[in-house]
Image (cartoon, rainbow, N blue to C red; front, side, top):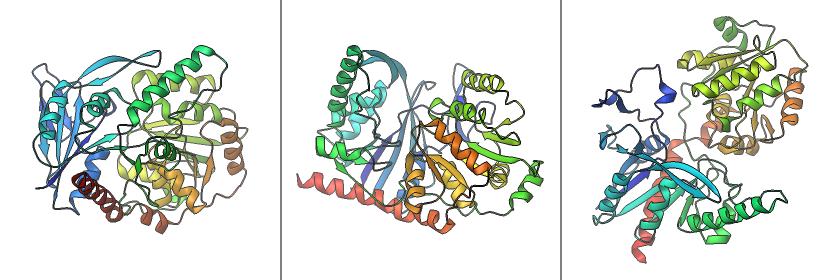
Length: 423
């Protein structure tokens, strides 16, 4: 009997982020005039497809909560991977002393219980971050089937105690740590994003951590080969050859710290620069970023390009004197991998698998996630002629080899089931 992996996404489809763009190929109209759709681009979809490419004794399903859905919608891709959308509501809960809101799907819980009781070997694969949608799953099933928690961001700050003398804040932090302890002791297996922080889980709860010395997410870099010089790319894009060009690419959300980057750029002594920023965020956050631009008189130096096609995106990378990634916490981030593949200079914060690659190979410029003065110093240094060591393309290809990574996940699934059967 085949092992079935059910990989549960903890966020709904990114309808807001794709507004104004065509629907995905897989979509359904809803009675209320709205629609739901499956892009098949979630990390869980990509990893599942790759694992199915090396394993013929696995079934792989991706389950995703969807605030639009009125019933379960599902699609089977050519690889055999199944992606399902489940009706979901927002639910309030208390963490520490704070009221929070997160997702909950009663029908997802019902369907999961049917799978667990089916007699087929089941593995539940979750995002290990603390989310309400995971709490009932862990509580109900952690003794019944293996549950893998995967970190997509740096886990170093999970049990952090705030540096404060405020008694209420300290009590709140202690309550949170107690709740987190109850949460993480139910996750017996961990796939880390980065190594920092997970040793605490090993020591505290006896968690099995699946370490590795390569990426947790593979990349096919065949299309990410430099085909233009910096000047050729600038000519294509109509960018002044004399300007210092920076490029940043990400979702426009607070954790990416684009606001902090803009504030740093506003302090630059150098005047002849421009920074292009790709990606989109919600209307309120984009307005917030534009307010920062206006406050710092950066209107002529910052250009948001939104989502652009691959050829244009690649040209912006190739035109850059410096690719910048400023995430506070991240699983990737993908832009620094793209920069490495295109042999472009990069400055990045110390988070994510991209950071571990740059650190391992001693390339790029790595800055602390929250030392904004250091960001300013390093950007000024590069503008003033500091050489940035560029990654070797061959190294990033090895680091993101999907054949190695997909077998890593496949072996985890197989070994966990074998261990469970022996108990």
